[in-house]
Length: 337
Image (cartoon, rainbow, N blue to C red; front, top):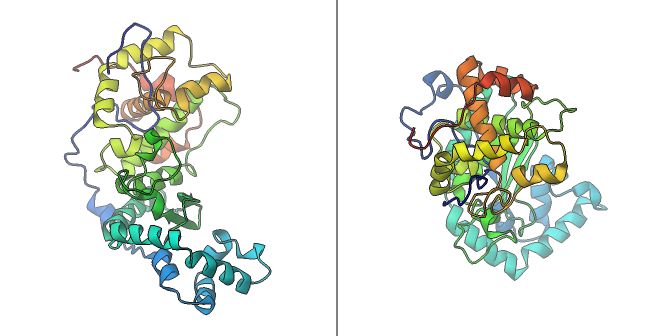
């Protein structure tokens, strides 16, 4: 990225570690105490069951076999009877376009064991740090690009059609810069980020840009702690080049925030320029990636955790964004340092 003025800086949404971009994940493995926990995850491949069904009776069996999925995802309660839902599912099943879409998903995800293992390990780590965490039921489905990911306390539904390779013929109706983040390596990080919200305490009266930055910083710090061997690009959704350039320009980015007195602004429109989804942060530079406020918040949170030596539980339970910022001792790193 080439910045053309002292006010040209950029901002990123997803998590970036504070100390290095493209950071090598040496010694990243979780402890044996975490990995040796007795936890076995079973993923329900509803997508396979759905397209292997032959008639309405088969769909009625699926509804009975997976009542939580039928209630929360298929919304069986909105139908006059389960038979009505089964009839509707059969109609979708017989749609030729849906069949072609499933065939594409099956080609990519016939073996889901690597994602299953990664998710199982993530659940072990979350349970270790937060014993109150209850393992949700996990399902995969082909939604016809109706839903990408649903994460609740009790259930996770992964719309696998959203996570076909970016080069695939079938793509969700998303801007290209967002669609590129819908790929297999992003599935588990996205789930972990969604789960982090239930532990991420905030001050509901704090509507500043700083509060948003710290919220996302905690989200990405949590995700990296749970998935220490996962490359930063799959957490923050930047290319390795964008990550590197962000760190190279961190001083310039920070000076933009300071000189324009941005940290304590509360105007939602202005906050969105630095936090919201966008192909670039045009308030800084059209060469700067979008969501840079989130990236900067990650760096601040990393510094806070390191300098204050707080546990992950203590970090997530701290609702005071101003305290985290002040006690982080954050200073932008100079290029090459």
